Length: 203
Length: 162
Image (cartoon, each protein chain N blue to C red):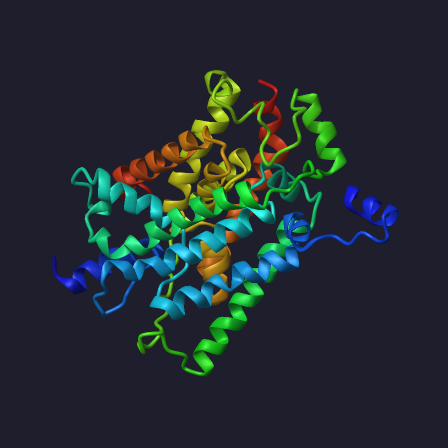
């Protein structure tokens, strides 16, 4: 919104390319780019797109502890661990070089709801009042950071995949188990966000 | 370990499996780093890693995430169709293989559990890595907790319904 007001005032000044890229990207740009990861990984090395398996490979590499689930040749999946390191680096690059100078635009109803829980810092990508080292020592912070993370790790492996492996790769290859998984992801999310999170956020 | 047994083991639970018959030198992994970097940049720039966007998604307050996932799936479906139709090979000339995912009750129970966690953290595994990259260092704890969650799953697997 701020960008369009600027453009109207200075009709002669055009937005530079870098300013254009620094704006938040639209879904119809990001979605297809993500979709292209599917054929890219297949073509460059016959790799099936998936990210939650990286959690399994870390367990297998670091602490297999004689557990059958982690006794496999994890070295064959090093590509996956390199891939997620790339995601981490991509995060650094995007934040350091392509950062959006404006605060994030969030739905006003959500802002109202969050203010009710004392979450007023709505500038960046995460609410720092919840996701911070200080918050980790509070009950709310601990639940959201530690318990939430645990559920993601346990749930994705139990389901055999996350949004990348099931919702994107699985649906791209028309696998009905992935449709089941994706529906359950969404059901769990709706349940939590609308019925349980209000209690957690009020802690 | 016997190659065939190892493949069967890794295919279990619809886990994604690398199956290139060619043995590559370590520097061949570099291309996955590049794809990962591009992926991470898209994650951040499209605000996919934003906790707020995920909350909006689950409250039906924004089309953004649905647009992303939907268009990604459509592009994925078309790509896979084209690969199969034109028998596209990998850059090394190998045939591209697709591994069918077998159904298990884990997709339901695990799926629901992951969904609950996704709404809490506002992130699925991929965004966790990117978020740490943006400087939210406390998310390392989320990631470690997720790894721990995976480990506990491995431990309890035989006792869980599949």
